[in-house]
Image (cartoon, rainbow, N blue to C red; front, side, top):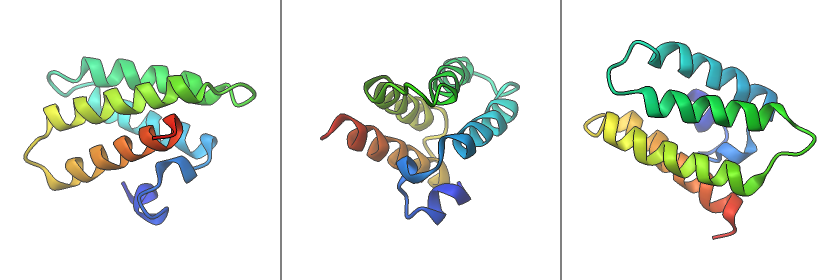
Length: 99
């Protein structure tokens, strides 16, 4: 979450190599959390997309960010830091989709 804050909440400003590292960290943390299979699966897809820096599909990344935002809200609806993360994911999805 610090990386998101340091970029003013703009997750699209995080370099893809740094984003992959952050995603790896989240995957490790979430593997043992109940009901997190969907988030882990989408994080793995997002990591794969960002790892292919020569041809990142912005529309696909936008869709994944939107899905992750929804899943994050469902998993930790009472946690303000997760709500902030979900909002940043939604914002990134909107930027990439041109909305």
